Length: 454
Image 1 (tube, rainbow, N blue to C red):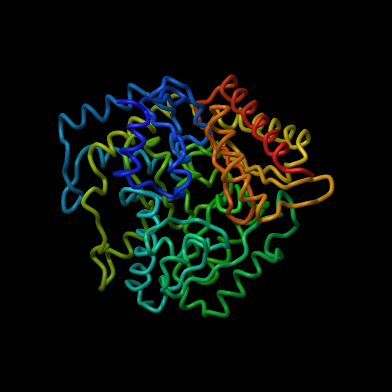
Image 2: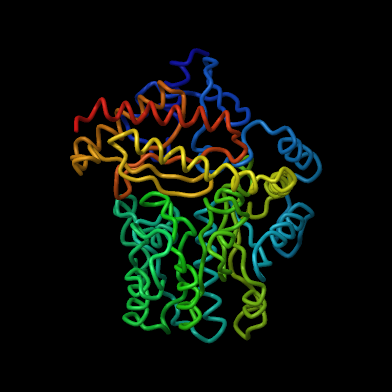
């Protein structure tokens, strides 16, 4: 079938995700296979997957061992539930995750995606407090510009107006507080930072007895790979402990090696009460998400007079094939020392991106860690001129998409609070792949400068 016929069928029958009409009308690639850090389209062209799918293909494409785990499981036990029973892949996956997770985070409740994982944490937080005699604890705190998912509960916690506004009204009782933009490294006592003081002010304003949970990512995706300043997460932990609030670390992107650690704890040093995960748990080879809870919290809920059951579930939650894939994926990640590889190569990648900043007037800032970065763009750093609204639209909808096609390096333009270029390669990317990635980024920045005069 010719590529234009395939595109025509897609345009008629396939509903695209987060895709503008004009982008769907453009000559988009149709991918047919993947290998390592690369995708191949119907015309045989190779594309470097610089975003690891959507921050998820941590172990790269085309892994025969992970595919075999899925195939073997389909032929052995294609489906069984975790409702009143168990099955081997889910038990093994949950046990392996418990070994890797920090502290007493030892119980995993499997679902199918990051949004569902956040929904699970929201529901667990509410039911947990109710089971402990505090049913008024229903409110949630999250940070401005943070993305926590698209289902209505997760979308309520999300703080991105553009994707929330079409669906209101959403859940009441969600407050958004300042993020850590502009704060890096040692910024003095974290408890004295305005962004931390603002959280306590909201807690006191709403009433501590009404707050169920505080959601935060170890490195915030929305607004561009915000690495927290020193002491920030211990300050969050202290506030939650002081007021009896559950601390939820949303690690849908950040866990399973993306930051060079299995979980955000490796960066923050803090053990949260709940962790949400998804993407890297299977490297995208099967849909899987989950919430990891401290074992004491689960025991307290189950042992309470009003508890006994976490009243939540999903048909596909802990699916045998998905959890078998997770076991194969995480075992390979551990055996091949992938987090260690990211910790070794990440600083080199960051240094190279900083060098590109020095070489291009359109780069305002480079943020991130591990294999997770954002390049914030502007018209001219030397004069301090930001993009006009029209220039930002041109860069995001014309210049960068054309640069992705021309360079055959797939990245993501981002407009959440600024004009940005997101970078998140597969964690198996070696120095040659990273070099090719950087050459692609260099060319993209040159294209931006050609299109936008200083």
